[in-house]
Length: 292
Image 1 (tube, rainbow, N blue to C red):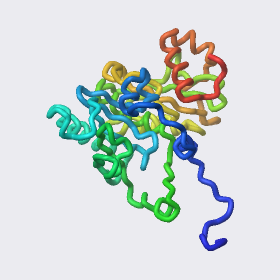
Image 2: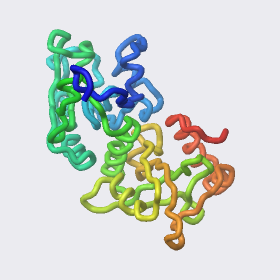
Image 3: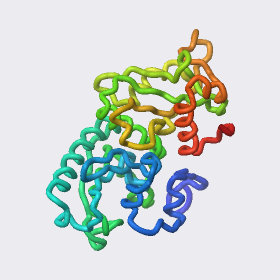
């Protein structure tokens, strides 16, 4: 140990998604929540569900992985200004996502609450919202207590994909998850036959774990990148969930279930509409791929 602080020299913790927060980027004018609702891409806005009176959105700067907020459509700063149906839906949606987060994130507990007004600690005081924060035993370690730093185990797009996929499964009643499996060198996509792989979902397991557990045994690299389905949550009731992975097959273990297809050939196999969704995914995740 070196110095009075007791920290080892030269240690780094990379959390690139927080750069815009600590760098002080100017927020967009107007309400953050209302701006997200007006967006055309729910995945970019981090909206995981739109209800009748309320919606659920991920926190861009989460306290813990899976940090969600349940928000009414009405732009108001106080619960008393909401209609009774809106307040009831907030409560039901909160309960539903508590159950969902336990399944998806495997958390040990949850913090639920809201701060009404700036004096109470509300970061967005003008639009009331309820926080749902997954908690794990030991997550309040020396980093936030001594160093004032919170380290998250995965990037926000990956967490978003996990939650959105579970919402889509419940809405659609799907029994499979479709995968967009991208080669690590971005040389193309992995296909099962002439289509994107479709993996059966396992009872009692989350969507992302069902996919991971099925293909992990024949992969040397398997990383969840993000949501690969329709940008709009309105489509979740009509289509099975779609997840994007970076995938590299294990060599020397017999025949692989998947074959590598160039992006150019994938366009022909998938058709223009489905390939367009792949192009949108690449843009959303800012992947370094050949010009599509």
